Length: 106
Image (cartoon, rainbow, N blue to C red; front, side):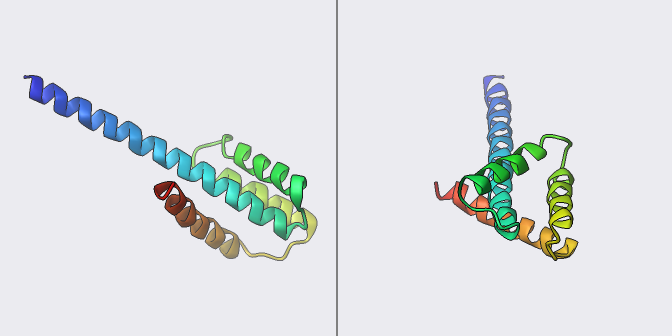
């Protein structure tokens, strides 16, 4: 009976660790994405960092990454930045892979 309980606890711990890793990777991706978007908007230094933090906070509006995409898309449209939805989502995907690598190697 103990081995079954130990096994269940092991699965629960692994699930919790996996979920934490996913959360950290998405937060890291959003920060990197925010810095990239800030550069496209002509922001640098503290302004770029503040914008990246705004992008990270935008992810708490709803599940998934549509909220982050919508924020950057709206900001690009308002500033006249010429990037397609496909290009923006492509950068998001690339930066997620970068974030996962950074977390694994940290």
